[in-house]
Image (cartoon, rainbow over all chains, first blue to last red; front, side):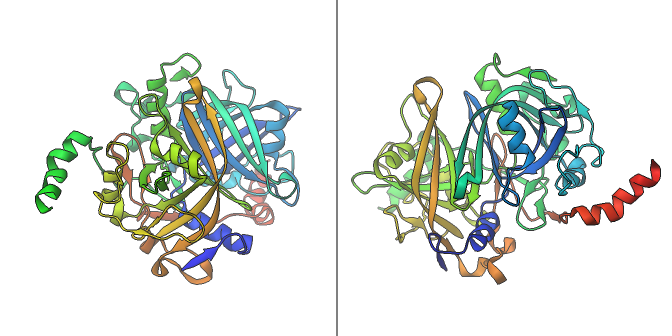
Length: 216
Length: 216
């Protein structure tokens, strides 16, 4: 089946995209407004895109024709914290996704604990196994009146629960227990893992390449 | 444990980021050079960031001080195809990650089948359950001499295997069988799924909010 995305209804495009680009990592983003009120909201249009410089990107759409608190706060303060969502806090993340009225600090109803960040004003979430303090690098805006924001942040500080940090700074997934976002109400666990060893060209030549040459 | 990313060695930043921003979706990207030679390479600094317009982003670093074929081809042709990686083709994707010499069409050793795209020159991969034809929107460059490319593409055409497409354009994960990228040689299956129903404010007020009020 083929769809022409230049003419397809946006809602259908949305369903096809979020059902296909999976599993997506989840950023539970904390920000503060000009009065210091905290906001927390989850986004899965999110990933790391560079380590040097260390760049995270999140994609945020307007809600009912106005910027979400996350975007308004980032524009005002140029700062945000990305908190990683483990199994333990997945349900509490879902409380942060409730459409509370403006000015509500979602961490309170979600029973999540703010902890002071080192280099930015927004708090990190103590229960998140990893929290990354970011400063805004740039915001790209697309769509009608720029309703879609693509926000690039540089990571200034990286916090990780001691138990999740393995030898030589390798992260322990059995402790981190990250969850991935699917579509609709769906999420994926990451317990069922497998390995694919990276193959270098010399090794490939010695194995598969030789077999292929024999068949020529 | 806290790390200052403004001074930490980039290799350590890399390990911490790829171990924490997980699970990442995988784009097996096909491009063609000026002579029509196909290139295929996997990237997990990848996600969807908007559906209106439909925007995918991939992050690509240089290899040994020069742009990877993927980036060079996208700069030359302004086009690429993102092919989604299912369990069935995960090992073949890993062949595409071999550091073959320039000019090698990875689809051949990987035993993947090129199929004509509709709106762009690079082929899509017939075995990929989903393939998205993209035109380059813009390339952002960061780091020393712009070694890190962040490439935004608009999706023009969307292909999906009929069996993976459920009712009302919902994607069937039992058919798609997407895999997520972790760190090192690690990948995650997505069979082990769970649901979290989105809660609206009225429902929250009626339930948790009431309980909270009772405790005040």
